Image (tube, rainbow, N blue to C red; front, top):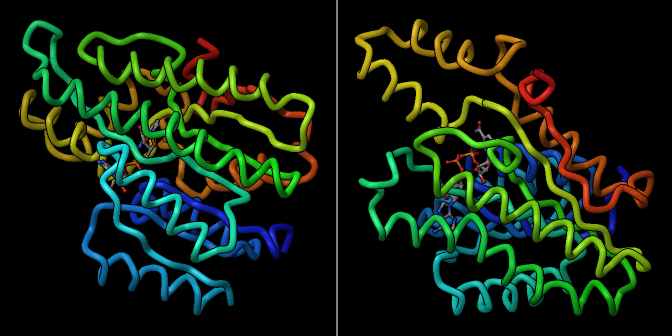
Length: 261
Ligand code: NAD
């Protein structure tokens, strides 16, 4: 277990990619705090399953990442629970697809807050402890939408490009330390966030679920397959390992070939 005696905070860790990452880090021996916005009993039940399965400590802390004060509270409580945060995974994210002229201003603001500003806050608050302990790993879950544009995704593209820029800058500020900061850029993975896009396409074009899935993948994923949450979690675990010490400021794609085309 390569992460035994390490501690990790995973935002948005109660579903989809974040839950996959939490499971993998726990299986490597890391003690965890999972953040989300589901009720405390629901979030803690998932943590209890992880703790029992992997023999680690796992706590759920609800915090709405649109609110910087709640992020400060989250980091404070995470340090109390774990004694420090060695690994920070900024995974929480929102998606909304709309032409810019109709893009709801409140959703734009929420997406900036959750997809980008939350990572600024968690990183600035976690770094002093990592510096004190002389070790840290920051993994930001960006997207191929941080590397290329797509009509209808102004907020998503802007925030994910911004998250990659933030990643590079933090990596350079930490370049001469044992603290690394990297981004992962997944293509489509079948989570709730993408299921909503499959459903919207099915409804718009009168397709059944399988047809809509094939059409969505055909739009831009050359493999014709979804990336899995387990694969993204495995890459996260690698970036948290000692072997990844000199991977710094990367925006690492895992996208079934999308950005190769
Ligand atoms: P998901 O909807 O299952 O996960 C999103 C998580 O973010 C949830 O746990 C949700 O509770 C949390 N979240 C949303 N708003 C929040 C808020 N205000 N405060 C706290 N937490 C909040 O979807 P997912 O696909 O697992 O997405 C995880 C990350 O992966 C996101 O950043 C997303 O942009 C990114 N991503 C997903 C895909 C994909 O194809 N699924 C591809 C590229 C990148």
